[in-house]
Image 1 (spheres, helix red, strand yellow):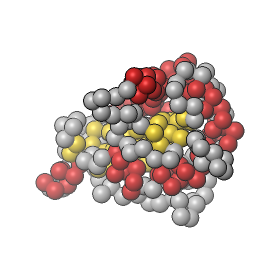
Image 2 (cartoon, one colour):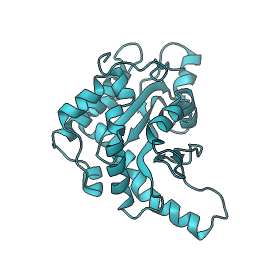
Image 3 (tube, helix red, strand yellow):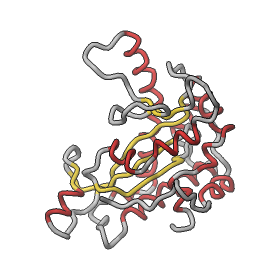
Image 4 (tube, one colour):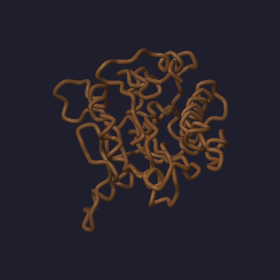
Length: 248
């Protein structure tokens, strides 16, 4: 894992300017209302066996929304079928916005997406309502009195944002062991390693053209070659950007 650790956290090659342009074009061609979206961000959970280290640890891992003990991850999926960023693990009780903030994802996203000086709308990611809107991250309009335009924008974006859910599902579809919670025991089976490697192998399957996902059919983009993807994974640490993240 150490050899691919930093590239798994954020695959810089996936966010090169030429890729951003084709990502934006593929998403916009689906009829969305926002013209500058290049990927989708979301959190996902991996169910684990109840920790045996005591009540406080159990509470930290317990997700009240899903009513289970879990690890959480933050993913950025691009329309070429690739999970281009995977951060974690974090304890299941953490909120998606907390993970986004503590991981300093915003600074990194702005560095690689806001690449055209003085442009009003830089490239951006799109997430669910759990995320606060910022320069390079958009989320749906909320409220009880949304305008017709707001509703139209939300509807058009929800159609494409589902790609991140597709890729989460593909990991569990082909690597079922990663979701077998009774085998996922903290401190024993290293459930985080199982999930993260499952995501890497899912990406590699995409690069080789095997078992193409709904993302491919929907956006019509070719993934990177296997060599390109591995090259992006096997990069050195960037001081000031890459960090060792902890569970709590």
